[in-house]
Amino acid sequence: MCFAWWQTRPMTELVVLLVLAAVAWFAWNSLTAREAAIAASRGACLAAGLLFLDDTVAIESLWPVRENGGQLQLRRIYSFEYSDTGNNRRTGSTTLLGSRVITIYIAPQPVESPSAVP
Image (tube, rainbow, N blue to C red; front, top):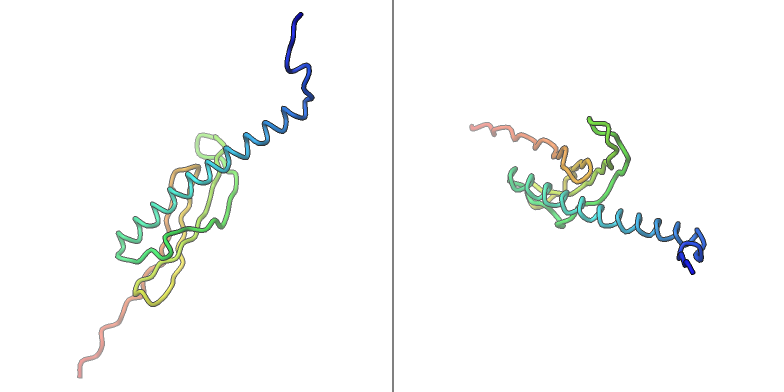
């Protein structure tokens, strides 16, 4: 007697398993990308002499895009807050393609004009 498990299970169970696997992959991939964004944002703030506030980033955008080789990737844009004085909050952003950091944006700091000496 030849017994095949796929003949006894409805096709919907296979679809449910595939959906659950896709959701698990997406959750793991999103956590990996978020950690990369936090590390890159923290490093950019440190290099610029700024304070990386709240030690976190927030997802702003998530879109599928094609990279130069034509491969489909997820482009994520994360926002973060930083401070130049410790008394204010400014917003920056980090863009990832897959899990690779593409750009980090920190607004130019205002230049203080020299005070006039009487």
